[in-house]
Amino acid sequence: MVEPVEPGMDVEAPVLVTGGTGTLGRAVVRGLLARGRAVRVLSRRPRPVGGREPYQWATGDLATGEGADAAVTGAGVIVHCATTLGRGDVAATRNLAEAAHRGGSRPHLVYISIVGVDRVPLPYYRAKLAAERVVVESGLPWSILRATQFHDLIARITDAQRLSPVALALAGVCFQPVAAQEVAERLAALATGEPAGRVPDMGGPRVRDHAELTRATLGARGRHRPVLPLRLPGAVFRGYRAGGHLAPDRAVGRITYEEYLAGTVR
Ligand SMILES: NC(=O)c1ccc[n+]([C@@H]2O[C@H](COP(=O)([O-])OP(=O)(O)OC[C@H]3O[C@@H](n4cnc5c(N)ncnc54)[C@H](OP(=O)(O)O)[C@@H]3O)[C@@H](O)[C@H]2O)c1
Image 1: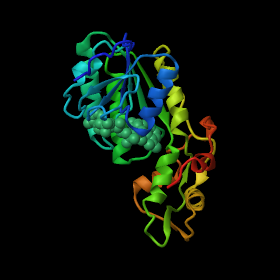
Image 2 (image 1 turned 30 degrees about the horizontal axis):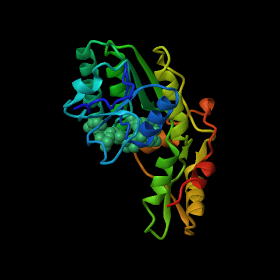
Image 3 (image 1 turned 90 degrees about the vertical axis):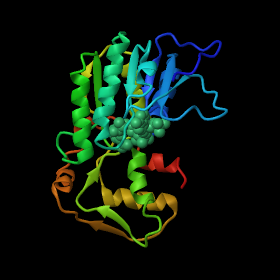
């Protein structure tokens, strides 16, 4: 269901942002509004009571496809940020692309993926790779950006262990965290440009050892405890240790992890 248009709200060929309520999607919405674009957010939930943000709201579930037809109606561009955090991303992306086809307006489909989805055999990454293929083969004009891990994901790994007397880190694994807002800026720029296909990857400013990032998180939170590097077996962690998820030659993000931490309190 797409909510009715408020008087004065510009909804001409809106940019549909799936996952517009998530970490990245919220920042994409801000970036698009700052560029003067009409925006429609797709969420499984109705708009929060009292919410009066200057964009349209569509309720739907990409896992089932329910509400997708209405959500894509008239959209000139779709920025697909929604994720089920698993295998469901393939069906969700297919449901979205099929709805876009039925809508007949051939919107530009912009998809956010992850650096190394073709190198680290994590089931979620395999799903993202398959979802990329759905986008490429959709017959719609498309752009795909792969980014490294967002700052908040790295912080959450440590925050999730707040009750533990030690903080575990992945031994031999580095991350190159990037600010979600910088990735969102890039997506907003892609969404307002011509379809670009697979664009250069986007990584954070520095590749850093996970133990070092964990210490930085603990320090910023004022929690003092030992960091225990843990070497995990299996192909997934071998892939991480080999740096398959890093893009050192695409260290284009500027906001450092410490700058991110300084702006968050938990
Ligand atoms: N986090 C990272 O480090 C990272 C790095 C690179 C790329 N990415 C990619 O960036 C994207 C956004 O990540 P994020 O961390 O911002 O995600 P997030 O905060 O977990 O948000 C997920 C979003 O997906 C929506 N969603 C979930 N299931 C849905 C469904 N069945 N139908 C419709 N919407 C659904 C949620 O909306 P509602 O709950 O409102 O329905 C929510 O807005 C993902 O594609 C992810 O793979 C993430």
